[in-house]
Length: 137
Image (cartoon, rainbow, N blue to C red; front, side, top):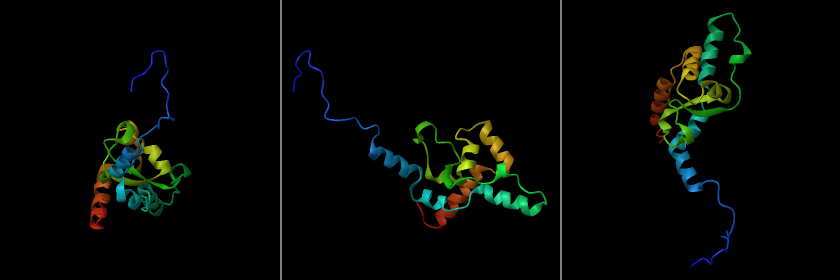
C-alpha cells in the first residue's frame, strides 16, 4: 500500500505501553514458582529481630519492625528493568525492609546488611537450596 502525499498517518488504536508476552517471560524468569514460595516465608529480618528480643532485655525499636507484606526480593540487584534477574537470588523481605535494603548494590545495601547482621547473597543461596529440596524450579 502506498501513501498519498500530504496525508497524515492514521492509527487503528492506541499503541500498547508494554509487550505483555515479554513482561510475562521476564516475570517468570525473575520469579517463577519460587517467587510465590518465597512470599510465603517470614521476612529475614523478623528472625533477627526475634533473636534480638530474646537475647536482651531491651525492646526492639519500632523503626526496625517488619512493615507490609513479604516480597520476593533479589539479593543481587537486577538492574534497571529487571532483565538480568534470576529466580535463584530471591530472599523474603517485608515491604519496609525491601525498601530499606535498596535495589542498588552500594552503601545502602551494605548498611542494611550490617544493621541486621545479614548476608543477603548467602541467604539467597540457603533459600535456593531449600526450594531445590522442595522441587521448585
